[in-house]
Length: 272
Ligand SMILES: Nc1ncnc2c1ncn2[C@@H]1O[C@H](COP(=O)(O)OP(=O)(O)O)[C@@H](O)[C@H]1O
Ligand SMILES: CC(C)(COP(=O)(O)O)[C@@H](O)C(=O)NCCC(=O)O
Ligand SMILES: [K+]
Image 1 (spheres, protein in one colour):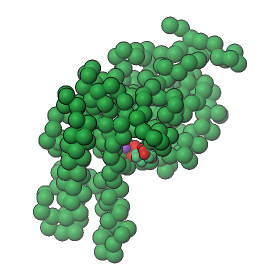
Image 2 (spheres, helix red, strand yellow):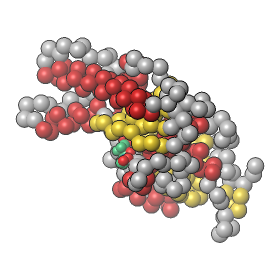
Image 3 (cartoon, protein in one colour):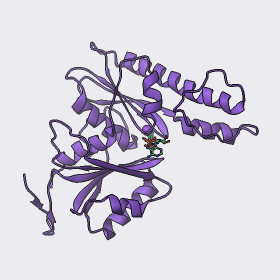
Image 4 (cartoon, helix red, strand yellow):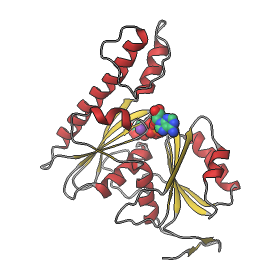
C-alpha cells in the first residue's frame, strides 16, 4: 500500500504510517506508527509525552520524524487539544489533524449518551476489542488522573463502567479539603507500609492500598455485572499501571499505550 492523494492534491506519505495522540488530563501522549498492521494491532515504534499543563513544543519538534505524517487524536482536555491543533497548522510535518469522537471510533456504544463518554475510554476499548479472545468480554482499566474500569461485552460493545479518582487526584483532594494534611508526592516505587507512623506515611498508605482495593473491587463488580458465560479478559493500561498492576489479585494483562493503539486502529478505518 502506498500513499494516497488528498482532495487538495497534497500527498500523504502512507496510510500505514501516522502519529496518534492521547490528550489526557495529566499528560499528552504521542505514538508514531509505521507499517501498522491492523490484524496485529502493532504497537507504536516510538512514543513521547509531556505534561498537559506545559506544552513541550521543543521536545515535540525534536521527537517528530522528518517524514510528514497525518495525526489522529482523542482528547478529554479541550484547551490542550486546541493548542495541539494550532501547532499542527504551523508545523509542516503534520499533514492533517483529526480528533476522533465516538462517531469515528470503530466501536458500538451501548449507552444513551455516547457523545458524553471520554473518547480515551472508547479508544482503549477499541484496542481491547482487537486483543481479546473472541467470545470473551473484556474489562478495561486505564489508570491516570482518573481511573476508569470499563466493560466491553462479548460482542464487542462498550457498556460503560466506573470512574474513580487516580492516586494523585485523591492526594490533591486530601490536601485541599483539610487544614492539616499536606500535599504529598506519590512515589510508590517502594510500596508503603500499611501502618504509617506519621501523617505523610499514613496518607501514602491510604492512597496506595485504598486505590489497589478500590480498583480490584470495582473490576470484580464490573465483571460480575457483565455476567457472561466466559470470564472477562482484564486489560490494564495508563500512567499508573505499574503501581497498581502488581497488586491485583486477579489475572490481568498490562498493555502499553492501549489508547494510542485504539486510535491507530480507528485511523486505519477512516476513509480518505
Ligand atoms: N514520563 C512520565 N513522567 C512522569 N509521570 C509519568 C510519566 N509517564 C507516566 N507517568 C505517570 O502517569 C500518570 C498520568 O497517567 P496518564 O495515563 O498519562 O494520565 P492521563 O491520561 O490522565 O493524562 C502520572 O500521574 C504519573 O504517575
Ligand atoms: C474519565 C476521564 C476524566 C478520564 O480521563 P484521564 O484520567 O484519562 O485524563 C475522561 O475519560 C473523561 O473526561 N470522560 C468524560 C466523562 C465520561 O467518560 O463519562
Ligand atoms: K484514565
